[in-house]
Image (tube, rainbow, N blue to C red; front, side):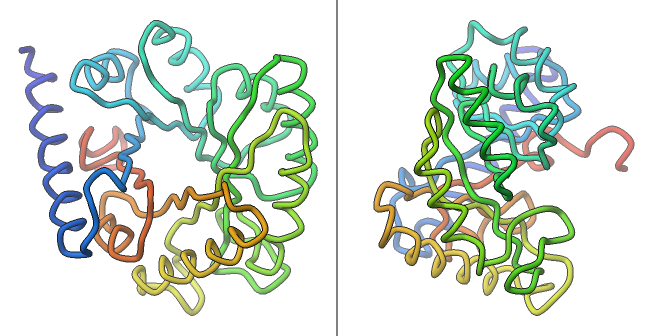
Length: 239
C-alpha cells in the first residue's frame, strides 16, 4: 500500500472501532449507523483510496470543489452528500452529482432543487437542516431552519417533484442553550425526527455528529455520522 492508503486505512479502522463501540454502548447494531466521510479540501485521489477501502458515502460542502471531484470519481460506487450552505445559483451543478442534499433550510432552495432535479431527470434525497441555535422562527448561524419551521418545509419538500424527504440533519451548535451540550442537542434532534415521522414515515435519516462528537450522536440515535478530520487528518490551513 502507498503511505497515504496506509494512513487512511488506519484512520478509517480507528473511526470504525469508535462507531462500533458507541453502538455497543447504546445497545444498537453497527449496521444502524452509516459513516459518511467528509472529503472537503482533499483531492479526488483520496476519495478513490477511500472507495478502495470500502467507503460508500462521501460528503462535500463547496460545489466548486465537489463538482470536479465527483466527475473524476464518477466510475466509483459512491453516494455523494452535499452538506454545506447551498446558494440557489449552485443548485443546477449540485443536482448533477449529489444523491443527497443535507442542508435544505428554506423554501426558495426547495423550489430550485425541484426545478433542477426535474430538468436532470433525477431524484434527490433531502434532509432538512435544523438550527438548534435559532429561535422558533429564525435561522441559525451556520444555516438551518428553526425547529418551528420543520413541518412546513418538510411538507414542501415532500410535495415537490424530483425530491424525496429523507430526514433531518444538524450541526452541534456553538451558541444558545445547546452550546457545549452535544448529547442534549442530538437528543433534541431525535425528538424532532420522531415528530416528523408521524407525518412522513419514510423520513428516517438522522444525520448528526462529526469527528469530535460522533459517540454522542450514536448514543442519541443518529443514523448517519459525518466524519472528516478523524479519517483524512487535519485539513490544510487548519493546523
